Length: 349
Image 1: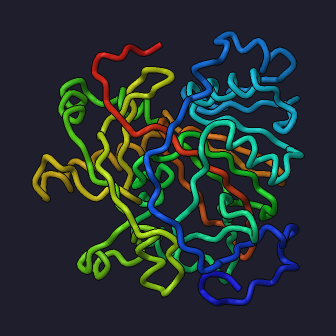
Image 2 (image 1 turned 90 degrees about the vertical axis):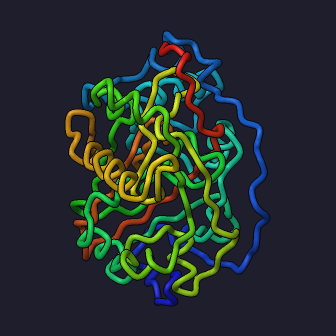
């Protein structure tokens, strides 16, 4: 059964062993974790990664597809250069990948300590894997979320954590015949395309990113609740207490030195330095700026065994729910990154 206690037909999915389980396991709060970005060790010429690869840039500002590469065969120097490419291009795509779940986990661990989601499902025995499985039975909440407020689906993964993810890897195992595309938007470009006075203003701000919810927020926006709070409201298992942390509205990327917008409607609740009305107004401007920023977006049409790896510090993404009654099944592995920071003096490389 899934998280809503509904029967899931395993025959609808090609990898039933990787469908969601919801054990009643409890985890301690996540401590501060040591991280080292492997991209800082990369050769900036990409001589190890790209010598025998075919490189296709899918949009001018974001998104690159590599062919002629199998992720499970990469050497450490190639992995380092891949991290640098992702940091620069935001998201990198691969098709027809043979990488299995153990190899995907090993690749994730190479980039950092792995995140364990506080409430969403994971395969039996793989608590560091997040499962995305959508069918007619499981997608009602997502559809309502889009009906009520379409741009709310733009997000950066679990930005409410103290050390939100750096690189997310996502492999599609079962794909609908049509639909289910994902869009990414560049946080770098979202920041740089604001006017200089507005950029200077938001650089001074911080915002609360939360997995909690207030009774008033639940009453008004129950389909837009943070993941952990929504799970608790439905009686699902919460493995860790929901957390919230204060992060800069504009963050500095530790590898590229570029500044990136870092607020999203899925997790950001308010700007600390502003009144409630001012915060709502500024956040609405920024959310709409990202959602309508087609000049700095890329759209990817998934195929079976395609993999995307993106940098949550420099991108937002949006999953489209247009494929029902088709089924979609994917697995996600997500290492923690550094504590977000803003450094006005760090130069872009």
